Image 1 (cartoon, rainbow, N blue to C red):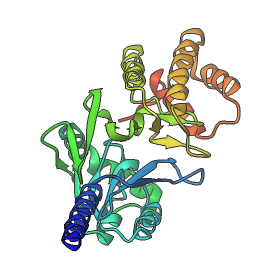
Image 2: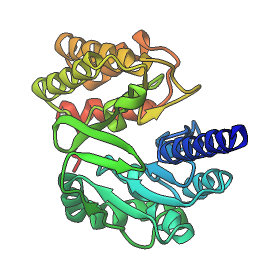
Image 3: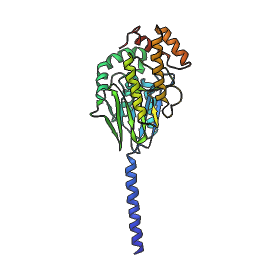
Image 4: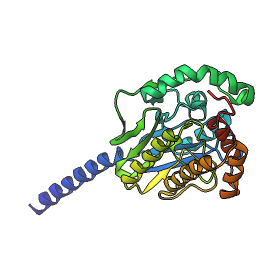
Length: 291
């Protein structure tokens, strides 16, 4: 009788452990970050999430070389890449898709409808321009993501929420880890590309989105662009918010792009990404055309 009871208990334990293992298989076990660094034209961030059985990638890098390094990082996990989410329509977030899909042809590529439409509209012209700068590091063709039907992304048993009031500049929120993947909305330790927010109103909307992020009380916010070490906690939120406030103040109190640029460099000495500051200022003040 005791032997039978032991067998029943052992069987129950095995079933319970198997059920727990099945439940955990679909949960995100860890994540990695790849940033192309100071030698890149744009130090863009790609984030990789892993479950026990598969990987998900957020953003695909700019050049073929950096996309290849990203592929190597994913391959080291031994897990197949099943899903790629493109967060923005800027080329540094999606030009690397061709290289990544060559290594993972079965990966599904998705983006919001607004991002897909903007890539369709601008991708060919962007490629034509950047091919003259990048040469063989540029893709041979533009990969168009599939448009998502809603505002969530399912990966394993996890759900990412797509948030943001501007359809072209959204961010991801992973509630289970209280984690934000900020895309182009967040930068850290470098001059911020503000050319897509030419007016005070645009930058106010941007800053309001940062306050929305802060209201979620995240434990970690990963910026779409940064230099140096990976930012910890909400460092990127605080940096981007303060930078936007400072940039608006300087714009109001200076008369030319030269003065604005000089003042920002004085307030933020030693930051990388000076091209971002110089081009963004000239575009904002109407001294330079940019599409």
